[in-house]
Image (tube, rainbow over all chains, first blue to last red; front, side, top):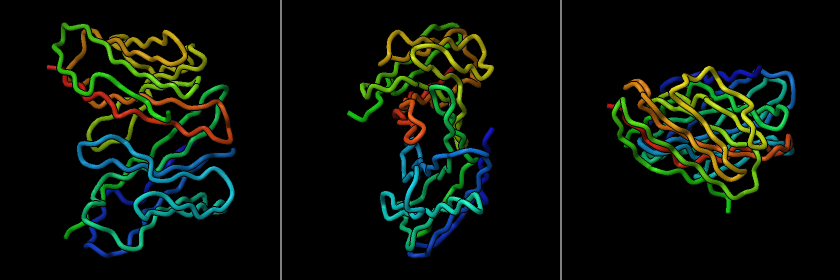
Length: 115
Length: 114
């Protein structure tokens, strides 16, 4: 079974600061990796995803993530955060079973950006 | 169409009520999922349907009863719920393709049990 670990439960930054949220996973097979964002009171939205190819993936709203296979990591980055980035961020790993996928989420990181 | 729709958006029910949550997708996905999400927690998998057959039931209480009438629809029937069942219920669907098995999530139904 796969597992996902997010390093920080809460992160507080000032606007324009750089962001890096850590995510490590454990799984013996091929995985697909995702970052989701959930704004206060809102539903889950996909930020970016990695299936194969270039390990540096770019997502919406200026976010990017780098897949480092040797470290089993998929850290999320943004060069300059905005107040509107205040949200809960979930890393997730998806493994394939017979006919369906099993998506495992990390516990989430709450990002608070102060203006 | 890359959308998963869920109805209703909000639901308030008493502990003796019977209600149903509905989910629909027209992406041709043959795997569909129900998740439960409590505030500030990640979604927790409840049920998985693959080709309209129940593949996973994550030890969910019998007061939650899933149904997959066809490949596009997924229902969650609710009966005799408890206040602790109040949560956001998310539906998702995916392809059966290991190279691209992204799960597409609906907006959720916010359920309050009084």
